Length: 74
Image (tube, rainbow, N blue to C red):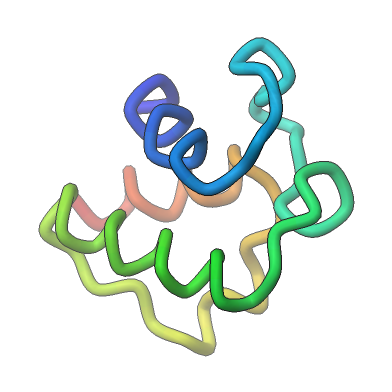
């Protein structure tokens, strides 16, 4: 799951693949803006056939947070 999530994230950031680790944070470490995050979330929803509620995004800070969220719902 982590590898697939990381591959999708790489479409939205300009950082080396090896710099994206479970503890990497979307805002602090990858400097993603809200448009990038929302577009990426849409792609995650399509890829994993899951709905990510907007209010749930307030609790997703790191790549691992997102992986855990997706694992709980698929």
